[in-house]
Image (cartoon, rainbow, N blue to C red; front, side):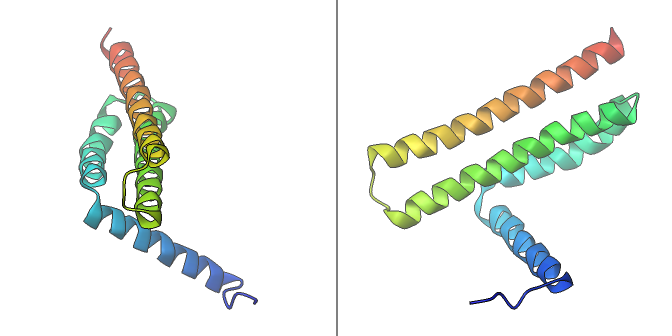
Length: 122
C-alpha cells in the first residue's frame, strides 16, 4: 500500500510525528523534562561563554545529543514494556544499555562544557 504522504505533505506529516514524539516525551519522561529545562538555561549561558559560533554550536549540540539519546532510551524502554511488562533479563539488559548510553552522553557533554569553561577562564 502506497503512503498518502508524498512531497511536502510527507514533510508536514513527519514534522507532526516528531512533534507528537516530543510531546509524549515531555508528558511521560521526567528525565526529558529536566534535560529540556537544562537546555533552556544552558543556551543563554552558552551564548555568553562561547567566543566563536563553533563553540556555541558545540556547547548546545552536545546537550541536544543528550536529549536525542534520552529520546532513544525512552523509545527502547517503551517498546520493551509494550512487548512484555514482566521482567526478563534481556529486557533489563536493553534498558540498562539505554541508560548507559544516556550516562555516556552526559559525561561527554560535561567534558565539553568544562573544556570550554576552562579555556575561557584559564
